[in-house]
Length: 147
Image 1: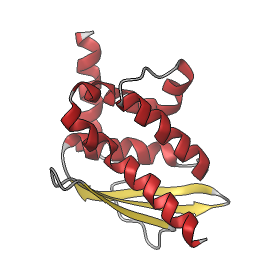
Image 2: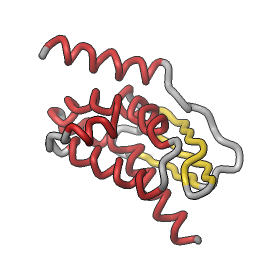
Image 3: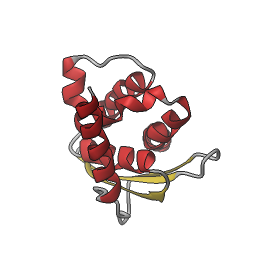
Image 4: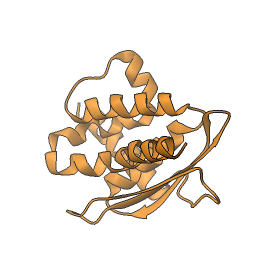
């Protein structure tokens, strides 16, 4: 178990230090600024859509390794997904953060995000992991309300 925890820690640090998609997108279809007033973490999520799916996903912001790694992993997963699939991913991730064990199928869906499973042992850090996902959900809601 200790080796698995170390591997997860390496994955989180890799996504933090070498963030994927950590660049502003020009003219995004969806843009939402997620902010955690308790710790100051911020994630600005941006999505470009084409044919009902996420063509490009990007983010920028600042914060702890958990919030930034979560955003990096999330934006990697979102590419090619419909908004409905993005919401489904968010629901799986939220359940995992609440301590529910994901099914094998769900683990395949979430990929590297499994590395954040241990965060649920630290309730004060759960909001860090969920910050980009809240921005995703709120951004999709705002986008749909304008359509």
